[in-house]
Length: 115
Image 1 (cartoon, rainbow, N blue to C red):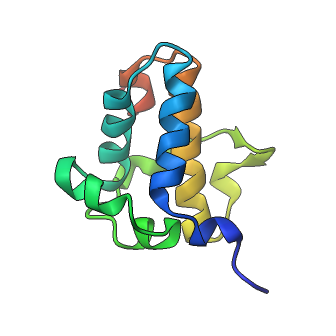
Image 2 (tube, one colour):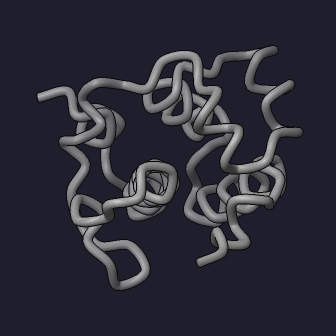
């Protein structure tokens, strides 16, 4: 079975789509960056460099995947993120879910799982 096409897409392309999505809902690029930092450990210049990576390399090379990311639950594209078995696809969907929550107006404390 071949790997999904999304794995070979540049993260920067997806990143721009995330920003457009949240800005339509009066949220900010800075909030997207905060979510990415929380989930993956990418910050500032390192994130800028990582935009050139493929999706698979973006997640495989992440500086520090957040140990609390398994608290992310819910449905993205009709699939429960917590049920996705393939590691990279689960990480992609975790990020999708967090961006969806931001676009829906959730507070950052809730999105970042700060109880």
